[in-house]
Length: 427
Ligand code: XMP
Image (cartoon, rainbow, N blue to C red):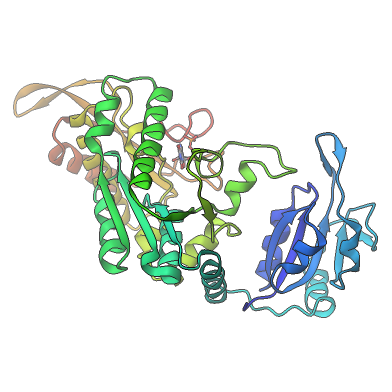
């Protein structure tokens, strides 16, 4: 293995990830592990140079105080305890500053600053090869950042032993499925199964206006298609997943309360017995992107905006119809093209076509067409969001293009509401 590691044991501190990032920022790889890791497991992790016990105010699971196995102090690995009253070593009261952290990492632990994406990828390739052997791995490749990066990494590691399945649910943005086939099928030579299930999804969604029902149909059908494909294949033992560190934290670690359940952590069908291959498990989002760049993925794939699993389905509000969905896809593509062409840096921007019609005049006749709503937000964590000022000439150009190029649209609106009180998406 190429890189040294600091193991942070999760005793419930809310600042574990902040510390992990601070250590990685100093060039040393750091992973967070559960507090009840056994000394043997800890010892068997590659290149552990130091252990941090990070306690804090909620050092408690199900009302019981948690602690580590005291044998951990006897492994001969330096232990730093922060705010941890029962530690068998001296405990410091708060997170160390950069100088103290540096001194502990490099003087006490003798760690080397060798954490970088090249080394991370080399290590993960070695680990995946060891885990998978001559077995086969199945991967649902949506084309999102995480699944794309995991695919690129697994292709490097095991080549054709990876089987990627890309399910087009008919709610993808313009050219999205084509890009997945081009990049993975053609350029990277992946073993790629492309399933165009547009009709299947849109038929199921016909007439369904309730947003929650729509989401359930899309999510449920997606798993069904994937299961069908999995059952057709033979000898698949492993399932690749683009689970990243925030997914685990948000789905609840042993000490952290559940924020929301992520489909790729909790939603696996129980009768599909796969072992998981999750090489991005310890990465934060920006590190996943850096990993993708290092693996040679195109920037437009790696720096993609967040895109909901149910895709354009949540932006074609009410009951989805094919003509309105087609208009939405075109309007969205125009918006993206023009914002990019204007060089504007906006966190997320897309269009919505609500299930209403408005009066217009087109070719000297009365029109009864849809409005397109432009939604653009700047945010740090998507919990709150502000609306950016898009220059008037850019808005005018987008409007002109949408009303002339997109059939069925007679109006363009720019939404001005921040989050709260509105959410970013419309459904
Ligand atoms: P809201 O609408 O809740 O959205 O303000 C916050 C952010 O989350 C994205 N979003 C999703 N992402 N699956 C995802 O992966 C989903 O089902 C989903 N719904 C919303 C949304 O685009 C925004 O960035």
